[in-house]
Length: 349
Image (cartoon, rainbow, N blue to C red; front, top):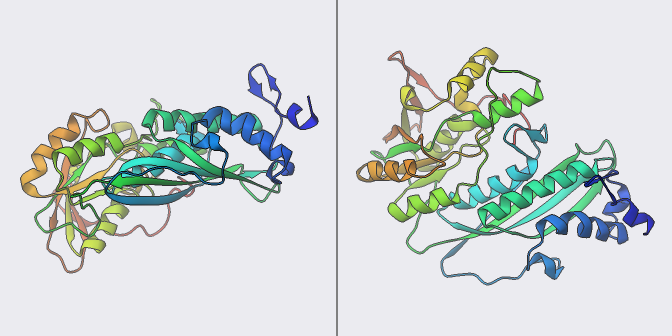
C-alpha cells in the first residue's frame, strides 16, 4: 500500500486522518480522495465516466438551472447536516419553477486539517439524500485551502431540471385576489441549528425540516397547473420571502397570523430568544400563490402529501402600489411585515 493510499485506510470502518494540501493539488492524492471517498458514496453511470463534465439527454420543455453555496455552522445539526442540506436546497430551488429536477453537481472547498471521517459522513449523507430524491450528483470538483482560511468545508451545488410545457410559475405572477398557502410549520430549521450552535436544551428536541420538495411540487402542479408562484422560504424566512414576491409582482400581501402554522416548542424558543419566527429559516417548506378558485383543491392536494400535512391558507394578495406585506395579529391589530433589517441567524444554510 502506498503512502497516499495509507492515508485512506479504514480503522473500525471509519476513515482516519485529515485533509491535507496535497489532496487539492490535482495529483495522485486528489485521485485517491475522489476514488476512495467521493466515488464510493456518489457513484452512478454519469459520474463514473470520469470526465470534467456530464453529458445527458434532455426531454422536451424549458430547462431550469440554479446554483447555491452552503456555509452552515455547525456542519451537523438535529435533523440533518451540510451534505443533505446542499442536496435538498438545490433540488427545491429547481422545483420552485414547477420543474422536475434531473441532475446535480457539487463542488467542495475543504480546509486543511478537516477530519476525513467527518467528510466521509457528509458525503454519505449527500449520497443518501440524492438517491432518496432520485436526483443523482453527476459531476463535481474539490479544492483545498490552507488551515485557517476556510471553515472545515463549504459546498457549492448546481441543479438542472425541466419545466413541462404549459407551466408558468414565477415570482412576478401574483395577482390581487390570489390566495397564499404555506406547506407547514415555520422556523424548525433555524431553531434546530441555533440549538446546536448555542448548546441550548429544550424539553423536546427540535429537528430541522430539511427535505426535498419536488414530489410535493409535482403533485401540486399536476392538480393545479395554473399555480402562480412557488417559493421556499429559506434564508430570511417567511417574512423576507413574501416581501420578495410582493416586490416582484408589484402587489400587497395580507397575512393572518392565527393561520400560520408554528410548532409550540419553536414558538416558545423564539419567544425565549427574542426572535420573530417569521424571519427564521426553513429548508423543507414552500409558499404557493394560486387563483382563489383553485385554493381549496390545492390545499387538499398539499395535505395529502406527507411533507405538507399541516398546510394552510395564510393570506391573500391585494392591490397595493407600495407592495407592502401586512399581517392581522392574533389580537386583532395589524402590523407591517417588513424586510429583514439584519440577520438574526447568520451561516444558516
